[in-house]
Length: 108
Image 1 (tube, rainbow, N blue to C red):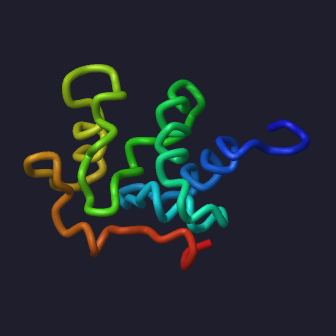
Image 2 (cartoon, helix red, strand yellow):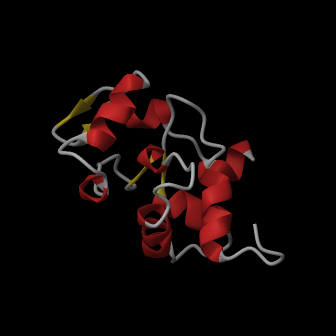
């Protein structure tokens, strides 16, 4: 990591701490980083994270929708990765989202 981490680097550090089988939202990461209105920038960071050992599939929108899935290779890779962690997804919506939501502001 550079001497002064970029916003994207900070997003990656938070995303790397999301536990297996849990998810967070773009907005929760932005809020944790002190940039509450920057959820879209977190989304850009997750899109740019491929190949950087970042579990970007665990970052979804505030309602538990897989809005970033079109940035993953393959037809349903994001969904497949989440399902391999035990999550149930119906119509691009994580089921029982409230129960598996990981809030970095509370957990870190």
